[in-house]
Length: 420
Ligand SMILES: NC(=O)c1ccc[n+]([C@@H]2O[C@H](COP(=O)([O-])OP(=O)(O)OC[C@H]3O[C@@H](n4cnc5c(N)ncnc54)[C@H](O)[C@@H]3O)[C@@H](O)[C@H]2O)c1
Ligand SMILES: [Zn+2]
Image (cartoon, rainbow, N blue to C red; front, top):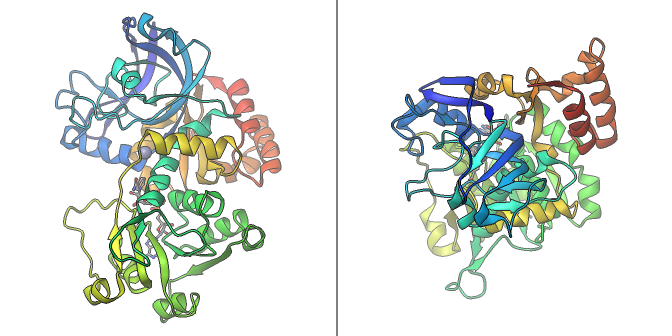
């Protein structure tokens, strides 16, 4: 059968193309991809081509399908997996499969397996490693976003404290503690706020900083301090730009004690150094941001490491367990990854979106591989709706969900947009 996908042929060389998909072997699965969310890591891979550690050397000959935050429907199951998987079922994928021990993964390393494709062949090792997951949510885009959500969950688990003892590491953020998320209203920060407010451990104080007023306003309208207070968390948003003494301002919010958990969501030296300075006793700084500079470094106060037990941790990505946890939180309606989404487009917009990702404002961009549609900001849909009934209806549907992308909007789009 034919598949259409965006494939990487070399540095900055992404092409939308249609090709013959090989028939599945007994240990493979054929699947339809329904949604893929675009990741900054894919942008990096597209720019670096084969210099990226996950991208094979021979992509000029065997181009790879990009996109690793995807979900969809199983179409055909090879003999080996018939007792475990069946056609028609929805799936989500944990992409960190570390194929061949080389870090190879969907979206970076395979010619017929990645998110920006109409149909894919899922290799045996994905099932063997338990990375093909059942999904039973109300909308497929949430399954795509379970991947970035799983990274945040991983980070929340990796933070640690040594309270009372000083020797045993107690894993995870402090329940009922004080938390700061610095540079925290980008898409990943939004997910982190959601998990902090609605996950299994909740801080009693959550301070979110950024320097972007419009993003801060959006965050405040989605996660209101009033609603957080009802759930037991005092939530404060702070624009640190122009604050004469951000350290003092933030510390004062903890009555001078400093924070138990500090998360850094931008790879910016002054942000990391501010994070260090606002740590309390036994405070853990979690460097979540992914720097591009291999020499990225910042100052850390070692007097405090010695006398106040401050410490640091960092994670990159999550594992299957974290993804199952993310799917579970979503399934229970506790967290809603729609808060990350600001744009929606069809497969014909995926290559351009990926190559220009750093210049496109907003949060996560969702690609629906079976439709044709230019990348459209959710906030522009009402305006565009004046000339296009599709956008008018989508804007109308999103009124029910505080202007956020939703299951209803997704269903309507998939049923009514131009097919790919
Ligand atoms: N650890 C992981 O597993 C993992 C997974 C995905 C993404 N990431 C990383 O998470 C980070 C955040 O991702 P994102 O998509 O939300 O990025 P983003 O760039 O959209 O958001 C970062 C935010 O930082 C703010 N910011 C920039 N400079 C600042 C400063 N000096 N002071 C305060 N705020 C400042 C920006 O206004 C923006 O809102 C990225 O670095 C990304 O690489 C990590
Ligand atoms: Zn990703």
